[in-house]
Image (cartoon, rainbow, N blue to C red; front, side, top):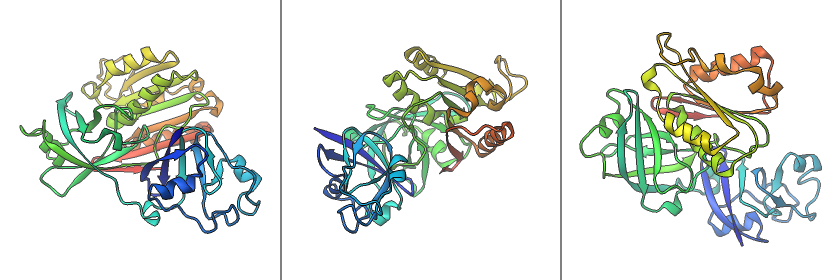
Length: 340
């Protein structure tokens, strides 16, 4: 029996490796040509210390306290030289990928469809040439190369891992390199190169009520997460608030409805900032985030949207004196993605 391990590096790069039952994670990484930090490999030095963010494992009792204290172990820190997994895992590695001699993972695929679903949003579907090689964590992004240029743009997957087609919600920017190319006659059916996955904004194990806040095309990674949660049929409440500027910016509503039908614990609302909106909910996401949703801080929040939205939510939580158990967010701008 083998397990799939996602190694998420300090710079946001992620690599997936296979790990056999009874095999140490450090050994599995070396076998997969990834040089994780190490000195002794005997549980003495602590150089290989990482954090397991998701999954089941055993550390044995052959390491010393100087390498990993009891408190550290309780917090999820691990020694990869001693770690044997018993499920798929996500491990945070506290060094950049380049320090482990990991090169950016390059992929190729074909653009299968381009749909201008609103003035502001394009849905692009991409069929990878090697789907098995394209592993990612729900919420992560890749850098798509604009064909015919040396430019690339970062876009989050809106599809779930393992889907036959990778999908993306792309903001339609007048005069933008990617938007202009997608509007050309030759976009559909064209080959495309992309690099990734990357990003520390991804779905963790759901252990409490979860709030998902999306602004504009920041809905993309949230959709990827919800697809996974719908498959898992989590028993914890999940509430989505999706905010846009104008009525015409609302997209994928039928898909959200379908996800809610698959996930009985999911509720959702859409709000529009334009005071002339025909939608029942007006204003910004913070105006529709209630004390019941926040559950006195016993909640996890996932937020993806433009920088002003992220800062508004952070200010809102600070002013209410609410500190969620976990708060994961990603800011995006037209030509860049910055994770935290």
